[in-house]
Amino acid sequence: MSPFIQAFYYSMTDWSGFTPVMNFIGIDNYVRLFQDDTFVKSLGNNVVLVIVLPIVTIILSLILATLVTVGGRSKGQISGLKHAGFYRVVSFFPYVIPAIAIGLMWRQVFAPNGLVNGALTGLGLDQFINYAWLGEVATAMPVSMFVIIWGFVGFYMVLFVAAIKGIPAEIYEAARLDGAGRFRTAVSVTIPMIRDNVQTAYIYMGILALDAFVYMEAMNPGGGPAFSTIVMPQVLLDTAFSQGQFGRASAMGVILALVTLTFAGLVFLINSLTGGTKKDVRL
Picture 1: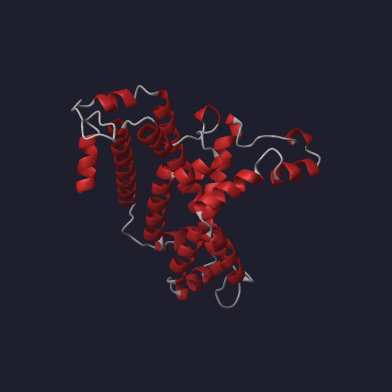
Picture 2: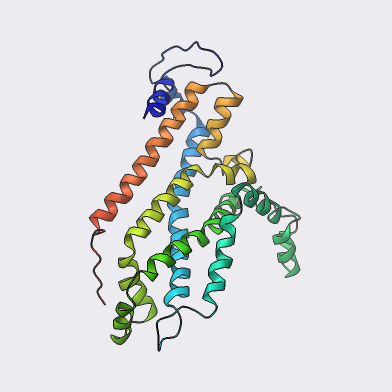
């Protein structure tokens, strides 16, 4: 707890970070932060990320995990798709690549003369010649979110595969005998039985979305066009080490910690209110 208490104390001072002198200024840093358009924009971007990234990543991961574990033949032994083992290994590859390498790689792919524009113009879509995907306000954030999702879908798929394999095969066989299709089985059997895993994955992915520093710094070092992709950790780093305002940067860290705790608390609360402790299977 000591670092958090220290950070909170520093956030109430005008400490520059490079001298032992600091004056207590109360909540001035917090007041100034919410009058700072750049910080407010970064806070809004983090909120967008924490809403979109966990939902999309977990839905895609659940679909893929279901397909490679119980999405195979509708007759005979419960099994996944053909070559499911190969799909699991391939989908996990992005997670073992360092985040900074992923960001730099996709930055080149989406560059005006990159692979994406080359493929689109090759299909006759000439409007994408030299299109700057990360340089336009309309596309910079969606492209950044796509890259982060790409990097984590495989990891959460493997997590859900392990959870689904823990469900007794007899339950799936009973669902099949009752005439439940794949979608109904996934909604009524798989998700309720691995609900705790989904909750944990949602919190981890949400915490990553509230950071996202490495990916955003690699693809959009300056915060993107019109700060459309800037996130709180980028503003914090600039405020502390470029502007020498560690007191103000500490206030940002405190706000980021409070947002993270609030997010985790909301996930637990919603899960509890919607019967998260129960594992009823109803077809």
